Length: 98
Image 1 (tube, rainbow, N blue to C red):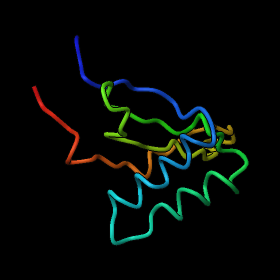
Image 2: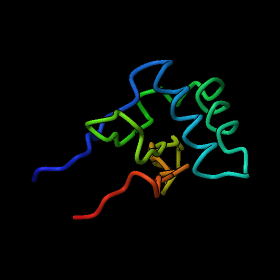
Image 3: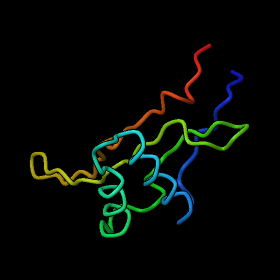
Image 4: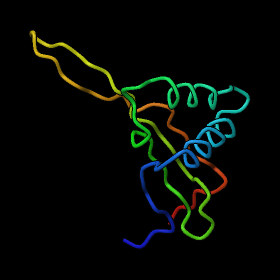
């Protein structure tokens, strides 16, 4: 399927800064970028590669982003590593259907 978007993981500090700014824009007026930055900087079990983004191929602008937030559940005495999909944002400006 040919698409104008590239789906990839965040790969470094520049991507994390871009995702923080993206969250501030998409969730405005709520300062969700501050939450994103806190998760990136202080949640040691959440690596930067836990952040995903869809970028427009031509402009490299972020069209969508999300984080997989790690959790640990215990079920019947068995520890399970799970992830919550959070801070899901979609830019209405860049999304093109069809």
